[in-house]
Length: 553
Ligand code: GLC
Ligand code: CA
Image (cartoon, rainbow, N blue to C red; front, side, top):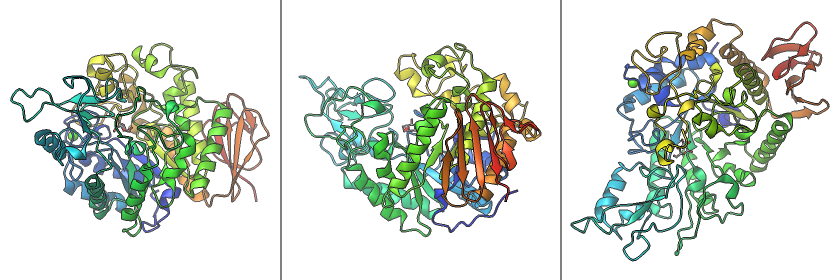
């Protein structure tokens, strides 16, 4: 049953369950194979019935789709393939009427190369104010034919691309521009006040339209050390980041100044707009982004890399809670998103599996244990939903959907595939359009096809199928979210650490959650409210399961 929520509560985000919609793959309203706002508006009752508090909408802006929409050509509009601004307003109204908030994705590190600013920069030439909004440099070597530094792109290859010189008839001898991601994603120069002003204005544009919060894409990359000569930085990996605010490209101290400016803008609104940082920074530095005078929250990504292991889960949870407390924030629990192999699959593969290599075998080697993966995924979700803080769910995880490992090479859309010389498939396996019905041209995604191929087995995970099955993952999520809303009062919480292979959590008000990792466990006294796997009359919880129990008064 949809709940009523107070849309004026300024602290809603601290405990919210936020559901990520990847719009091109959620629901297609006009049958062209691409998900859109019409499809999403139609499914608002589904979202209300699921019991989420907010939708996080991944980029829906005009884009050449060089990186699934994270190459934004216009920050103040809707991609015509996805809809119109009027439909966006309609979506906000429909969500709000259902008591659901909306968070939009802001992509401040780079624009798309079709953005009017980048096009102006190309035309204006070296030394112009137009180029100063981005990061243009002369090349090295006598004829400038070498990139300005050894920096590499996240998606493979050099982070620099050379452009023609608009002042020479041949176009020869042009400058290079920086792109930490695809060449179609030129990085802004955030030391330029014009860039800062522009983004303040973009935040206001969406806040004025009723948007409740922002998810900040690669928040840790905005400030860079651009002093000459450019420092060497031949590798991009979270493990090589310095953790003292002086790394060349990421998580530099100056970035916090930018977000303090954003907080001032977000506080112009009543209630203040919320934000969550996507920052792949050293764990100890994450609380900085979440400070009350900055973004408020930052994603905790530990559990998207950890295997199904009691000690690793216990430690990650503890650390995340400590970090959130340090920042005066609340923790964020994440198991999946559009960049990561879906967790129902991760937990069904050996702990030490090399996921990109596994995808290159089209998901055949090693063979995934779907039953175990799903059991653990359900248990993990219930464990995280029992913790203080907010939870971020990714579309399809409520169906227990596995990764699509067997997308043929020639159907891939992720730039990672081309940029790595066809050695890595990338992230498309988590972005395949959702199955809504067990049959139909695209399993009910729309009346036409689907921009990424859906496998036959999607039928088993269709919303309509799971809706009708009381033991389905969809119905487990619905029940869990409904109970959580009633039970999760306050932050009061402790672990009961007296059993091997078990994580037991006790919340204020006598709500207990017990999770088993590879072992069974006798449940403590109390009423079993919900469990991810059947509990027998002997009250033994099977392995790889979670049960919620209410203490008897
Ligand atoms: C973030 C997004 C990812 C995108 C990248 C570049 O990591 O989640 O999908 O490719 O930023 O914008
Ligand atoms: Ca469409």
